[in-house]
Length: 297
Image 1 (tube, helix red, strand yellow):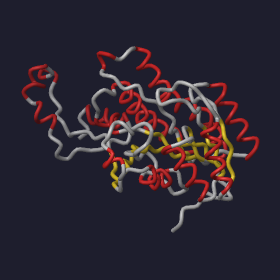
Image 2: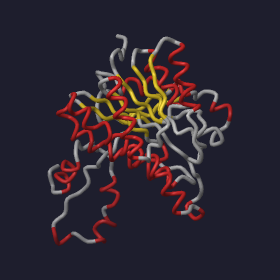
Image 3: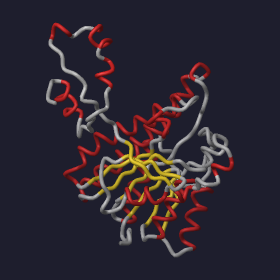
Image 4: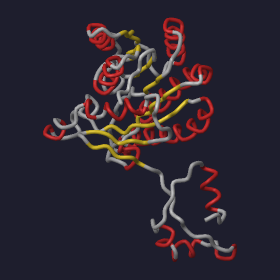
């Protein structure tokens, strides 16, 4: 089986380098028309330039593919809407959105300003919201859409000095969970990738010998599958360095107590039982978790 994207139109944000570039090149190689979106700023989000995005477009066209460059900031609602409108007018549809754009402002929480926190959340979380909102109705109307969010091990499991990044990245998983439900009857599938890759974002966070094993190309297979026609939905796939794993938000069987036992002392006494992972489950919805809480075990 070969996954092809002929006649599909994809928007990849943050595609001027690193993972986004790798995604754009591979989708184009497999037949997609690709919008290479990149603000062209520094790692902390400052500055802008279209040169990085245009360079990737030049690579795609030199290989016989079709692509266009776009320099809109994912946090600029008007610019994103303009991009989406132009793409729809030129190519007639939008099938795929990969929300990959991001910045870093790493500091310990005690040293992190509100602006450091807000800017990271704005780009990663709100940027993904803005781009997804811009294509959502198009995908619903055409009864086809594939959206990929980008989370991180920081969001899923935590990393020192990245409170802002972790909050934004886990927020994207929550966003996916609801969009999965709202997009289901329109054949709009939403998934999330958690990359482990050597990029500008991680170049000084890991030792060189480890980074050498973690090129963006080691994440591409998961991303491409998750935006393909036969993709699943509601999946969080960790990818990088040759490893591919799936992350779940699980729920223990827990306990159910009578009203007279609903005390902090009961929780303290039975905390180990509440925490016991034997028979844990993965609820399909928040309502399903509520049913468990009300005794529906």
